[in-house]
Length: 200
Length: 294
Picture 1 (cartoon, each protein chain N blue to C red):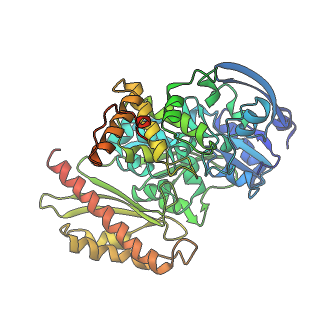
Picture 2 (picture 1 turned 60 degrees about the vertical axis):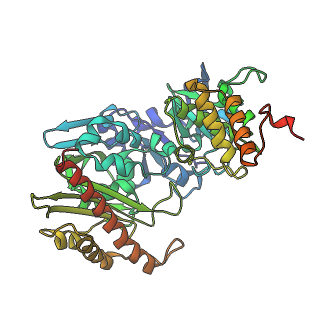
Picture 3 (picture 1 turned 60 degrees about the horizontal axis):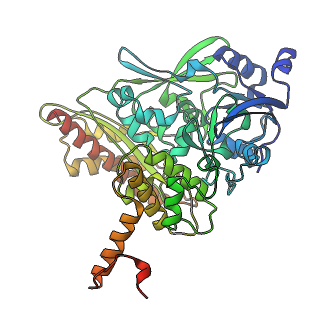
């Protein structure tokens, strides 16, 4: 290493300022720390789940300047001057969920919850386009995140429900009711009140 | 699963990046999108003394038309190829092929130059560069030089880049508006590297016969392959199903990959002719649409 290179780049630590979930944070980090480890260990944003740490599972996805990225495949220093959102930004209070989070709860779009923060963020990103999607298109859009529990169907339902809410064309309850109604009709029953709980 | 220590350099100009490459040579690696390099660092398959992060170099982020050339900076993110109106209009094969690269999360970070410099023979951008007769622009201590894509890819993950050089841009000839393009891949799962794939651009004369055919094939050898034998078998022929299928068989001797974990060589030989045939067929359909003014 030449003297000038050493003077400019010879340090193993850097001070960075990153806008995380709407607030500027300044920290000193080791240059080899990944963005994922930085968010978890320095900022306690433990919704960033580390599954594989080599870019396959998608559970560490965050929104970087508004685009979903694998945070295990970036260095924390690369976030200097940039914006990061994790699922913690969506609701400050656990009793007041973001509409996407509500949809995941209502549709049971999760089981163990490991991939859920990434799925919720990705859902937010794709429904903001306002485009109506087929179930196949939704599956393609979320294909970068692996869920080992649900078989994806409930996640797809949650994405569709959240998208419908955002577009304002029928909330989740309206959709759920119509599904119950269809199922009942298939069995030759009449859905009197459209409520699944009303049947024993 | 944490990167080993390295000297982290984040130059803001190409000249400074070249100076750092000249200083460190093969002991350094360029960090572009990081979608292949970070896994290699996390798994400690790579242990560079210096990491040269080119993400702050604004000159590498441009997409520009210069006469009959579309020049794409090495640092342009792959998803930008999918969305950029100029790219879709001038070289429509590019956005189509780019959609097959990994998942959207990878394309949000992954760069055009990074994919070419890594030179995975199963990757989409090296194959399209070969099919489109692109030119790779590199910058070194003695200035800029250009390398034809076919000469740039020299072997398995090996390119014509010298240790002190940095890839700065790719120049794609603008596709004639009458031409049709097609891109086909076969992979086990969405987002996986393909077992085999093909990119095709064709032009037809007034009688509907092939006047120009260019085909690149991925996943079948150490480098992306230009299917010259397939191309010359089709020039002057009518684009019938039989003619295309017969010409596509010419790719089979070029298949040198396999048997590996993912496929036998026999299967890849079969697959190579199938993807070539499908890509050409898709390109012909688009050329017909163009000539019908759709």
